[in-house]
Length: 276
Image 1 (cartoon, rainbow, N blue to C red):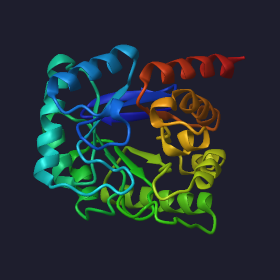
Image 2: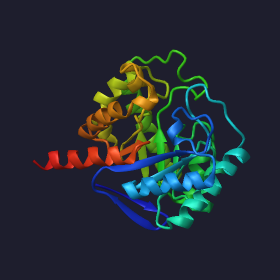
Image 3: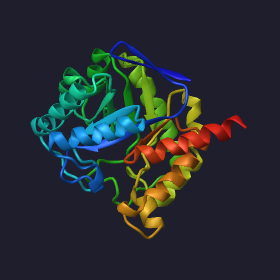
Image 4: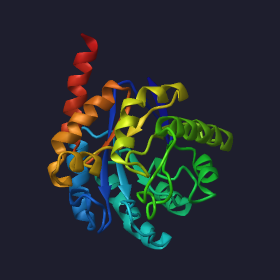
């Protein structure tokens, strides 16, 4: 069991959580998560919250392989109105800002976000860790080899599980020393990893327990699933649920997903299985 302090609200992870993905971008890899108008964003957020999402993750910068960085202003203009609109309709919603920019993080938190989800763990913005510490909110730090523009160009590891564990242990220590109290770790499926690397990480997920922080996994509809099954991101829901179930059995605390209802059902069945 873990607790997170989200702007004074103490939230308890006593069973696995679901984080719903909303991308305010035109180029994220799965079209179902792409919403650029606030009304569409609000509708998708309502669906996710109604289906049981614990967190709604708003991103304005695509991090798919090969994506290019946009300006801080453009990313802010995409995300802040979305956050404000969701909180207007659902004042109690827990909103995460998916960004590697400290300036975007600060603007999003001012607008009402209460968590930062950073794929770079501060490696792409030296001011990020101190900014999050000052904001006093939970922080997701993730492992990534390279940058979104380069990460899938022949990623290599001597031992991917050891490399990810070492990195996240070191980053957790850096975050703690910077003054961040609530830290979530993410092994970064698909971020500088081959399909084989991703399956190795999934099998090795229990090793991350040594860090003693909530573990988030982002497997939803990714190429590891649809390429293995010879389908597309649109056809990868069943495969996503299968890997989510494995992740839950291996200790995942948060599932970051496109499809909240399916993830909640997997968790419900897993919880019954655990109690037998």
